Length: 176
Length: 406
Image 1 (tube, rainbow over the protein chains, first blue to last red):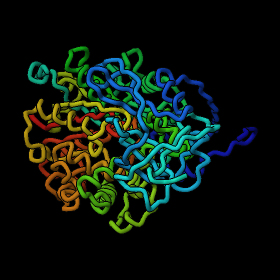
Image 2 (cartoon, chains in turn blue, orange):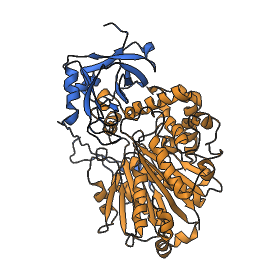
Image 3 (cartoon, rainbow over the protein chains, first blue to last red):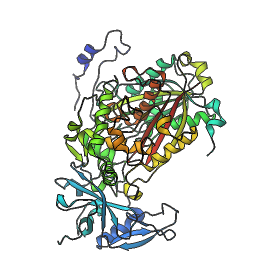
Image 4 (cartoon, each protein chain N blue to C red):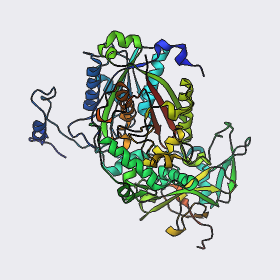
């Protein structure tokens, strides 16, 4: 939007609405302007990084609290219950869907998801040997999606924009 | 926990006055400063104050620097309404922002740091950005590397939580659709509401699927608006506001806050409900010796960001047994003429939700009801009201209780 000698305002519309004695009747001109910002962030995955490095190797890692044995996937870098520093532990990556949603819109955040057409199956998976639910995308026929479905990771060689997409889930019995 | 209420009864905050703007998808003629100005002027007028010179502290409630494309809005709005050089604090707690700001003001008053606090909140969540951009900006309040990168947005996380509730307790879509119908119907009796609608359950169940099981009409609104409440000690109110003595005094009598993990999965196996809300409510009830909240609370404004979130909240607030929120809602227990009216204002679904103003607007509704000034939507004989807000999918929950008592 560019501005010069004439500026289009909402003045006429407002005049019709505000009575003369209105306390703001001398403030009825209104202009809307545009303002665009483009931001690109480079941020560290920090102590989570090993999880993503191992995904690239086709291996699934979680963290385990040495004191209370709780296994976190996604990995937590400090135990939620006792503030101990956890150890890395390898899981099979197989598990069971505990809840899900079918997203009928694409918020368009991140190139990896932006390119997906059609509904997105967001599943929360209790991994074998894990104690928390790992959220990720499931790719399968719509009629197979259900709580209780057994799933396994499908590793991807890339290239992907975010290393989380070096995997997705498929039904455990699916032969690819 | 020390019972601060009993220890300092004379410092227990009272509501001096309230003010808010209409909530709307877009105020083409006003920006954040204008909306805040209008809410604060309305609050001053309600109090019968000519100016803010005697008010000792300002607390600004707004959630998003992104939506307002402006940082340090706390200082800017404080400056705008002419409260300099008085101290200011900006409070942010996601969807719980407004309630957290009020809770903070309560603590300031109880502590003796000051005797009066103006809490004002504003947000421009309406049409200043496209809905695509709005979705992206809201998504940034989720866990970016683990959830947002999956295309997850809050609608999806809420939906997954509701799916688990349906699986575990047999909750039905038509039960939470009842909330979508009722709250928008309630909004028709609120002149400041954004989206009053007369709907049927079938219309909700046939609206476009957004994130299974949530459909378009299960989702709350993006709004522009502002709201303000002046809180003080009783002595300050009596000394500074003639209006205060003319209405039944309302005390901000209890406040509870609880937190939960950011990601739903980290809460397993507790993924059907808001554990932090239950914790917050229990803390608030403890402060008042409430053991049967459904009988003890006369009305409530609850955080119906999605229709099912209200259903889950009924259980967490102790208004229904765990898993029984659906049948209780469908039976009309929380309707305007029910046992415990919930969201008489229209809630987030019908009144609207400019985040920083939402929790304050909830408290304003309770005050109007307790003063007997709620017009067509008046809940008769109401003496104790509750507000319930949460951030994210319940990562921060705040439950505030307001009472009319001498």
